[in-house]
Length: 362
Image (tube, rainbow, N blue to C red; front, side, top):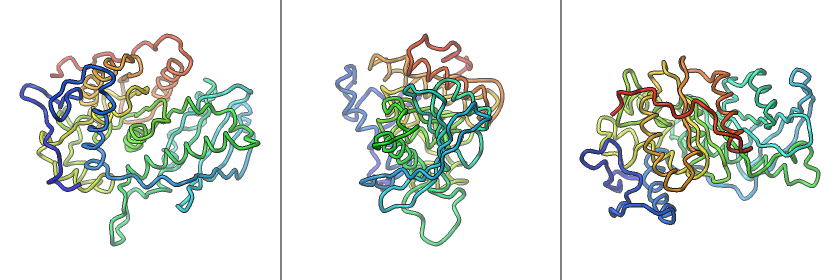
């Protein structure tokens, strides 16, 4: 998208953030039936300018099962080593852990295989809740950091990583539907959740915003370009200038041109969150993770809540903020698993979500 084509959408006088529920033409969105058209406007403003196009969707994605093992230290869970093969495109590996039993299971998909945030203790916690855990390594799809090699790649890294989530879901669901699906046949295609931490959280949010098969999206400490706010920075938070200078390959080239003039952006990150509505969304933050702007994440969360209320599903949107710093801690995983239980199984909403931790916010 050229800057000349950027729509003139901004916060009105007295507003901190652009209004999700006011259309480009000024119409107030107050009926659920108006939301699809408004959602399309939001996607048109945000996705090309911030993230650029995702790689194209292949006609078919195959799931090649390479190895099956029983993991004793995980209670006899099955480990399936798979290769995800989008037709005519590069392949990547995925590991799938399936809990013992015969019942249909939700699946929790993580793209942070390059960082080992999900250790055996984490995977055991996921399996103990009756979820399948799947993980791929997003840097098999797009390297990070980008190694200079002449021409820039056709797709920004976050767009490529989000596409990786989509293709991993293709493979999981294709595996479910095979004549002899084995352990993959236990995956419930209606209960797909995705999660990522930090830059992986940004990718998970973008994946959830662009694929309606994802029933639950979770981003942990995702910061600028993720759940954080560009217009309002807490003390010590990463700015648009900081992130596009350090990691220009993550984003579309046009985004960095708004550094220092964020008020001219035709969106803020509540627009990205709203693209997920009415599907479930959880953001998990940390009080001492100043660089990831937890205060700004709370502002975009509060702004997004208006859409979930309009659609009659406010319980589908949640946020929590724990003590500590920038880490995908076991506490974060348990918060996510509690939220998964409430969305997929229907018990009471977990306590401790949506607590206002920053009383001095505007």
